[in-house]
Image 1 (cartoon, rainbow, N blue to C red):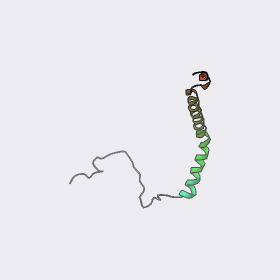
Image 2 (cartoon, rainbow, N blue to C red):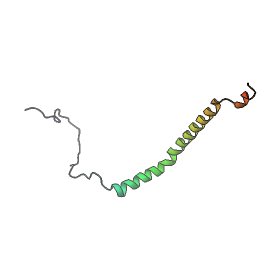
Image 3 (cartoon, rainbow, N blue to C red):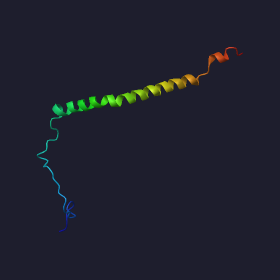
Image 4 (cartoon, helix red, strand yellow):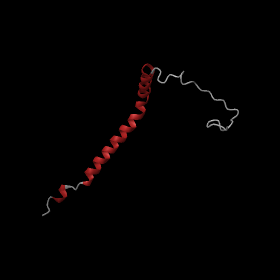
Length: 82
């Protein structure tokens, strides 16, 4: 009758393996292995990632404050004006 979708071409020399959906466990050991693994990975990377962000935030906030300070006029320059 014709070829069905998924069997449209014959592919040779490629081996595929699959596991039956009935033999898979969708969420095995999430709480006993997954959460401690997430914590371990987070704690090992936090000292590499956070300091540049803190430095960038401090630099940005200092620059913003300095810009606002320099944008204002000096009141001492206008003390003796009428």
